[in-house]
Image 1 (tube, protein in one colour):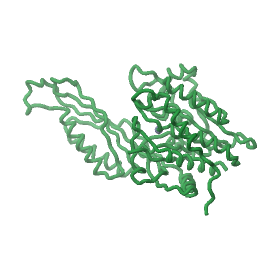
Image 2: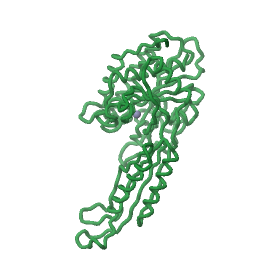
Image 3: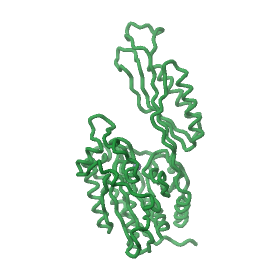
Image 4: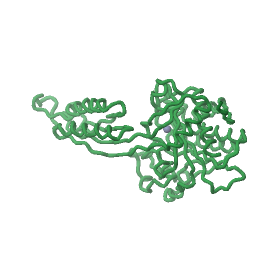
Length: 413
Ligand SMILES: [Zn+2]
């Protein structure tokens, strides 16, 4: 018989924190909208900081506005590396209640039960609440990248859309000096491990009826712009046979790219999600089309093969080009930590499986500086996320938090 965990997660307390947090930015019909450093986000942070302090944590905010709640066992040196866990507090436009929120509320509950159970810890614990994971200012995973020294000052001055505040402007509004962003940086040796509990944001766990997913790693991501040129002309006077319509060629590319990705096997996904047509008028034959292409896979070889096929498709059409804009290498999670998560599940008698994450997370930042990292997923209803319909069951939130707590205990004792 395996021994039961001494940690008793309070399911009611966890769920009521999640529901209370969802009220910040959740007044409208548009789900939860808590863009990083917006008024709703700042109010949520103030509330969460108070909750952390009530839970006995020493809380500070760093130069990147990350919140850090630390629990330091009395009889150990503060220089011992900490076991850290957490997620982000911001959401996308018209987002849901659980993306990010689950990881931070679960982390708070873990901090409480560690103290209530009186387990002996050999490492300090840190609950990390990251700023702007969703990239509403410019690029995603801002807070975790700043914490590990991967943000350059120039990035803070960039805005994703003209007219929106930059991170530098918003940090100044909080009384911070963006020029001091490096002060948020910490040494990898300060961390023994990092863990993130998150909703799956896909349909796999629900379809398998399995409550816990142990993340193998975060998939490779390639992004491109597909540009197709044609010849503008009068929509009324140019005979069909004489047209070079950029949008018609683009339509063919969209269908063939979709087929190429499908042909690449179940491990590859690809999306053309943005399309701009120039000059974009009802009475002008389209002269140019610019489309985005987002390709992801846990299998480098399959992704490369699909990329090659798409290059051939695009180059076979007159005046069409494929321009790479981003290549993000996939990040594997730590083998030993995956095993500790699995052991924690076995101890609790909770079913689990292994899966890859097609989405990026703060947990992908830590392995880049060789901090052992693990991720735990729970199912979300119909795989829906980044939308108001995002839903998880209280039972799954409880199980995920129990596994997180037990994994933290094993790593920190
Ligand atoms: Zn998230």
